Length: 235
Ligand code: URA
Image 1 (cartoon, helix red, strand yellow):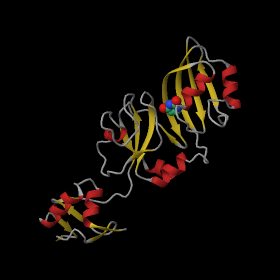
Image 2 (cartoon, rainbow, N blue to C red):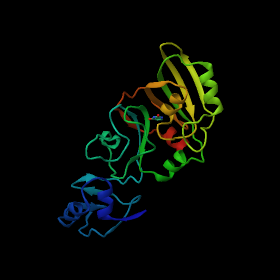
Image 3 (cartoon, protein in one colour):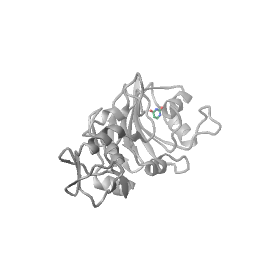
Image 4 (cartoon, helix red, strand yellow):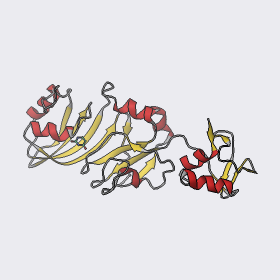
């Protein structure tokens, strides 16, 4: 891919477009060992070696991070009051990262953060019915009748009933533990499904989205880049 030098540097988070233009004009950028002072110079992102202030600045078109979202952070790219999931990715280079789908502020677990819009579309399109697996703690005893209602699809106040989902009861008691697989992503879907059977979600964590499984070594708030195996199955 060929890109203007100022865009290349700004995309890599090295400053705003006007900051990097100034740096280029000052002679702080070398391409293939030659100082280049024209912000409009076209860089070949694969072939050219770019140095910014003496440091290599390789171009990354896409970034992919797996975050174990902690409670208390919103699934957004920026907000004047709240902490956003993208702010947690301290090693990010690109400014156009976004979360693939939304988890509620109090939900934990798997969130993919990327700037790859095509991948996001493949995972989120309502037509694709990508599996989402959640672990939840529920107030009250979850029963097989509840599991049957989930399997049949239920009315949660939308035009259509929910698609059939699989509810596995891991522990039934005053506080029950369950694993739920849904193939849609409606607003507050899991909470509304339990509400429909008269129960309340006390804790919710996403474990899987399509083929992408939460790395359980990541503590809430921790993240890592996707590995090559994960990228191969997703991209
Ligand atoms: N369903 C919910 O109710 N909340 C989430 O965060 C995700 C799914």
